[in-house]
Structure formats: C-alpha cells, structure tokens
Image 1 (cartoon, one colour):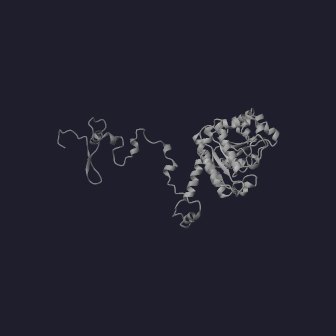
Image 2 (cartoon, one colour):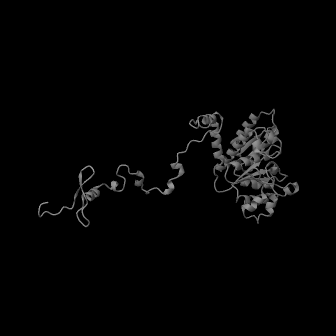
Length: 371
C-alpha cells in the first residue's frame, strides 16, 4: 500500500473457488459496505420475502401468515379411497390386495346420499310431525314406528314418538322397550321435570335410539288426554328433542287434534290399499283444506301401506289420485314381520320395506327443511 493512502475499509477474502469478495467494514464505520448497499437497493418484495425464488406466496397474504389451526389432518394426510361395501367390487379389491378399487355402485352411492340427507341438521327449534289416519287398522302406528326408528338411528340428535291417541294407543306395543310412566304421568309431573335425565324416566327405549312416550292402557283415562295436556307435554319435549312424531287418533274433531295441527311442520297421512281406506284418506286432505291448513296438504306425505298383502285394487290409480293433491306419495310393501302386529325389529324387515322406510324419512326431512 502506498504511503499516505488511507487504509481500506474492505479487506479482500477468497472463497472456496479462489474468487475475491469484500468483507464488511469494521464496526462504527459510516460508509455502507457493498453488501449493505445491495440490500438497500433491493426491491421491497425481495425484502418482504416475496421476491427471492422459492419464497412461499402465502407470506404475501393480506391477512398475514396462516395460523397453526390451518394444518388439519384433512389437508396434510393423503387418504386412500374407502373399499367397496360388497359384491364383486369388494371381491376385486381384496383379490388385487387393494390395488384395484372401482368404488361403490350407483345404488350404494344413492343410499349413502340418502342417509346424509336424513342426518342433515334442521335448525335450532323442534319440528313436529303428526302421523294421521281417519281409519283404524291401516298401519298408522306401524308407519310412525318405522319412521321414528330410521330417523333416530340415522340422525345424531334426539327423536321421540308420542302416542296422542285419545283412545287406547298401541305405539308402545309396536316399539321396543317399555316404560313405567305415560304421557298422562308426564302431564301430572310436568313442573318437576327440569332435565333430560328426569324426562328419560318417562320414555321407553330398548334396541333402538327412538324414544317413545306411551299413552295410558286404560281407554277411560286416555280419553281424558285433551288439547291442553298435549300442549303441556310437547312444551316439555321441545326442550330436549329435535323431532317429535305424534301418533294421532282417528278423530279429526277431537280437541287433541287442534294442538297437533297447529304445531305441525309437516304431516304424514297413512292410507291402506282398499277403496274405503283410500277415500277416507283423501277426505282427510279435504278436511284439512276446509279448516285452513292448505299448506299442510300441499306438503303432505301420503303413505300407502300394503298391510293386507295381495289385493284386487289398482294401487297405481290410488297413487295417481294422491299425486294430484300432494307433493309426495310413497308405498310401503307388504311385510310379514309388520303383519304380525308385534314389536318392530328392523333386522327382520324385508329389504324393500327398509328401503321404503328410509325413503319416507328422507321425504320427511326434506319437508322439514322447507318449513
């Protein structure tokens, strides 16, 4: 270095390739080093982390970096498709040691979609669904039981079926389980029932997730169950259940029917496969229209229960008649297990009967979503 020349603030250093590059100045020197000058001249995007190649674009989001909660299992884990549920599709999956998965059939996919519909949420208030019939013996209680079991077994919330027949009701005879108390007992103790654990003492549940509130076996006592009693009971049930099914009596002019229809969000009308049963069911729709419930008629679900097996009546014509009056018409086929008149066990039903029960539940949930 020549005499009198100022000492350099940058000392050369060779890297591994033998190329010289400057070192930063000593601490306290005012002049920027070459490294600092390059940094100051760099674009803002590069300083923020968005410029250099390989930088994550997520750091440029206006709302800032992602929280730790964004690292979910669904996002990070590669999930293999579920194997088929049965048939040759499952055989092929197993024979290929899982390397060949053609998926489920359209039938299975439709059933899965139907179950998802039945399980869908309905909001934050209780929905009431009365099951009606003007004639006894058409299977109204059976339909109530089937519908309640499918809803309760598929949904995650609570479902109860209530026997509001002013005459001797048989809902508890068709449903699994037994209870020591009835709707009349709940009316008497309504001011003392303040929790679901207390209410559960008044309902029956055995072999199914469906809760059942029975009527009195004494017809004289059952006849005393009136409109005010019905409203008192349903006020309690609405605190703990999402869906309340009402197995109604055959008398449309009975006082219980007033509260039943006023609270109804959708109705299921049951008809048999005979001429007089179909005519009475149609007259029930006319009665509802005449009493200002045109809305219930338009959205009603008519169930034609083939409880008597073979018949000479043209059931297709009955269905066409009701399709001209209501939105949904469904036929439940004859089933020996249901014809026995004993407690209903879903496992003993014919596949066609189980399918019809699921279709009915899906129709009911669809109507409740509209209400």
